[in-house]
Length: 215
Image 1: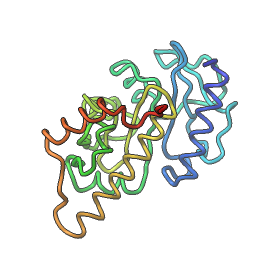
Image 2: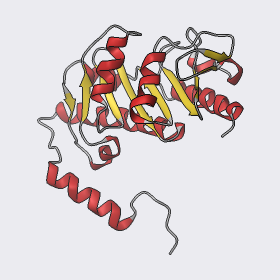
Image 3: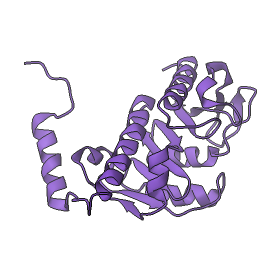
């Protein structure tokens, strides 16, 4: 995808996340990779109103190569995900339920098989000050073997091969947190154990679950 198209997609998905209530005001950030460059939302701009021409482009070292606005304060976090996990896109939200769950658990249990798309259980990275290398390192560790992490007293992060996938995973994580919260108000939620998760993965492979198939 050409860089211009990537910037447009970053802006579009940022606006979508705002419309879905996943971010508020200038909080949260979105990025996508185009070759060796990363298009990322700028700091101080409302996500609901961000435009393609406001999206900043940086190189792998975080140096701005295109754009007039400073990139988000979580730039190091995004670049760290690209370096360690070779992702195609990253979404960071301050979604209500994801943030609420991060306040009370160390790990979101796998309460539904759809959470397997995130890696099953979702770890909660310990709280660190926003925009710091310490936060980036904590979240990167929590992402090991996962495509999502909760961030204690802060929010959530997801990544994927492309921005549409990363965004859908952010929405899935919020749904999973909401499901867990509602179940926990009734009692102790049942969770899927290791064997059940393995059986799910085998069934996905067998049936090509989630993919369009012709008869």
